[in-house]
Image 1 (cartoon, rainbow, N blue to C red):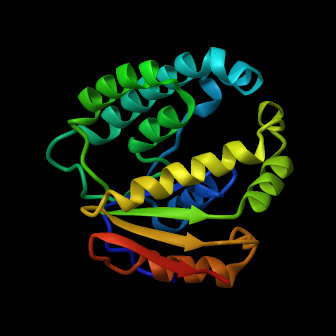
Image 2 (cartoon, rainbow, N blue to C red):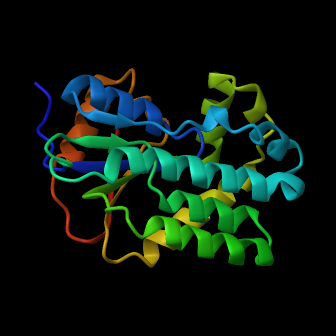
Length: 216
């Protein structure tokens, strides 16, 4: 029997290749929750961005932001019975700003930030933000294994900068319960014991602030 989860809105975050979408799909399978998955493959600028980041950073981030906003608006900006069922998302809207800060130049980011705060004003915060943390070597291994052609040239330093952007955000978000799960070399999609431990950790309630648990 699946471990009970007290959270009505659960957001799962992590670096590229951390396993966040896989975990969300497993939660949907076991809890019959409403699932929100980022539609990243629809971004027509993404392959060009990985080849030429400076040229394509702004359109790729703007496209992501508008698509994420549209999707979350459909799922979250409702009335009445919003949280009568558990909602699990494989991203949190703040991700939009973190990646933009990492990828845009100063002037582009200043404009992007103003647009972000307008769009973000109406969204509820998750009851728990789960962050799957893996070292860069782990991420690169997962990225190679899943074989998306446009991801194969992602640089280790780029993944490191994303990780630092998340941790910087965590330090300055004392109002949000954040659970960092250390899953180095943990294939929880194959390891029933590791997945069970993740469920036990997610099934707890946490005070606002950062909490760190090692899995495996």
